[in-house]
Image (cartoon, rainbow, N blue to C red; front, side):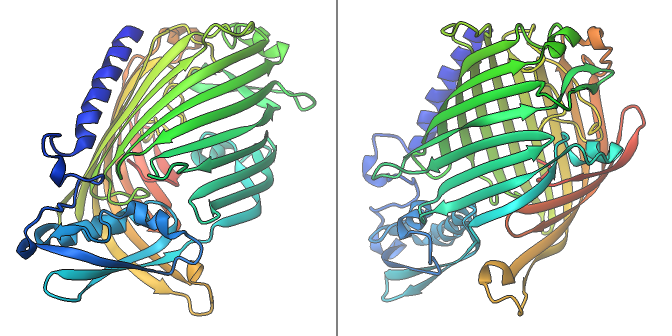
Length: 484
């Protein structure tokens, strides 16, 4: 199977190389990095960018803003596509998550020359604050027990746009249910053309309680109040390559050093092959993101491909040899005025059906779940998920100002509300489902319902959904990210 994955990977890279070129190579005179601006346009059909004038970027360096624009000074822009290019540039800037508001205006200075004004309202970038969060897979699982012992607390320092260069510095001191002490630093651009970035992170995590098996599609936990049942020393190094606006490649090397309690291995012989496990991981991610707004898209499309190889046989305590492929395809349409439709497919393939429990992830984690099955986990090695939403814009985007707050980073905010109908389906392939009586594996899953989404600034999304699954179970569920 891995050979098939590798073949697909090569074919995909060939396709992406053609797609990112934008136009055939035999016409290099009309192509630039962004694939939009035609510098050979006839003067009567185009406008020449005289100056780009920035305002509001008190912290963000000008070159970070220029990187997201689909034009440069002296470029000629087709009159027919002028509005589209300015609007896409505005969305590109919003999708950096550096700004709450972006406006782009223009002013003619003669018959074919134009000045372009880019105005931004920056976000608050430094969040040094104590935090309190729940450690269950999602809020709805925690709400079943309302167990505050499954809570994390500590100090979280997130410095976005560090030095005004879109760099990210994160310090994590997390205690409580899941302990994590770590540091990460990301630099989006290290070369003059602003196409290559790097990131590094490392830390330690320790857990007094973790799930050690699945039974009847519910996680079963093992707890030790005095000692860790699982410890992990981890580190990562990655390189990103972003040639154009919409496509990005990430190449990453991870190192993990796990130490498990003896009781874990006695409780589940398939939890891990041995008490001490070390391994390297190679991870590759390709993203092609053409959504209008990443936090809550309404139009556009998104595609990603993840390839991950765990274990290379170079460490004494490795005993890991697994590869995964995960992909996600999402499409968003505006049907008519305030009506929208979205659909997405998530899929995963694994090379090994005999995976240790601490590595295997089926349905019920992250965004890989069927709505209405929030309380369940469905173990397995391969799966496919279909998601769909029909939504109506109940309250179109409104901008408000809180007069008593002096800073524009917080006083200017926006919000919108959507009501939607949802329908999801999935199938997961699991070779070991009989061992834990996980009856949802190797069956088709279906869920449908209605929802209300509240969207506001700082990429915040609040979703309240009422859904029902194929067993006739129904309930209200709360989520904090876009549905698709």
